[in-house]
Length: 79
View 1: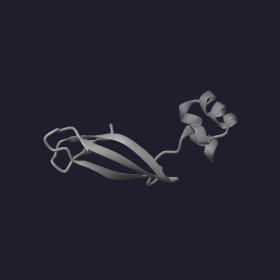
View 2: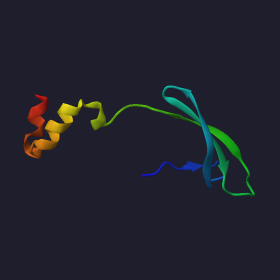
View 3: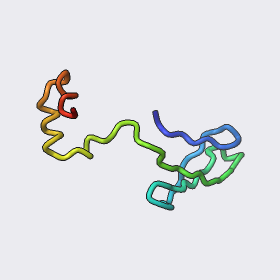
View 4: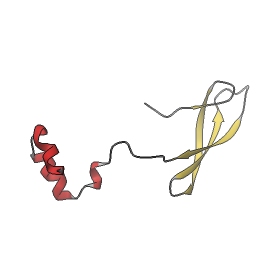
């Protein structure tokens, strides 16, 4: 699912630029794609929480062991 921004008029808006405000907060500068509206606005995009950790967070040797282990046995690596 792609991230979509909607203008208050109901039409699509595009992100023209953004700036990082903090480690987990960005401000996105948006513009309505309907030229008759012309609304420009700023939205805040903030990281909330992780649903599934990145495999890149695991050490290289752990990632190698996971790849080499059968799917049915992978849970035993974390026990």
